[in-house]
Image 1 (cartoon, rainbow, N blue to C red):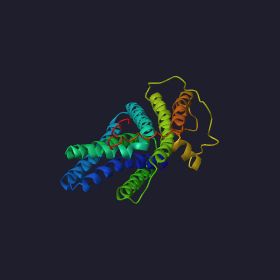
Image 2 (image 1 turned 180 degrees about the vertical axis):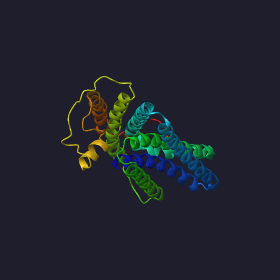
Image 3 (image 1 turned 45 degrees about the vertical axis):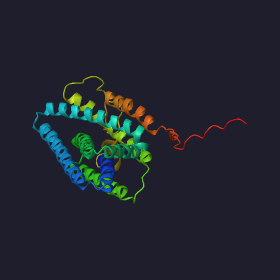
Length: 286
């Protein structure tokens, strides 16, 4: 439940923040017509993402067993690439995301282009929803309980919507940099687990046959039905007997990514504002 909850919370909050900021700008400027179009676009993006998720699950279930393993490998690696890009981008831009979005929305309204804001909201929800669909499908395919994982994703999205609405109404203050750093660390561990799973399914599909010796025996620690088993398998992606190539893949991905996300970043000094006062007239020498 923890991995899917974090995925739903983080992805849902990114989309909720963008939509909330755009909705606030349209509301303040009396553009109710554009606001209605925006909500229609948001709903359409959500439906498209749900169809994508259902299509991926249906396609993988209709394939033969070996082909299913190959499909899971492709989806898993694609999810790792997407979440890695998202983590790196948000680590760099999270601190100024709200300010930058408000500036872009203000410029669009100044040009009289409310349609650009509607498209921005639609594409934001579509992008985050697509990432969520692929990531959740990959995680749920390897989850011990699909129902529990689904509940976690739904709870995460609901919490994200509540936080986004609170920020929109002005009652919730959230340190974006700290929030995305904390969730980024969890997602790095989840993505590293997906790397291990993709390497395992690649072997099951007949694509990868090197490094299949057992790296370490964790049967004494990862016992079925225990909390540690849920933590190691569900969050970290470690099985009781991981192969050498799987352990190497986890370490190669997780260690540098964890260092990058956790590394403190310096605050950029705000640019000095140009003075609007006229320069003083020169004084003639006596």
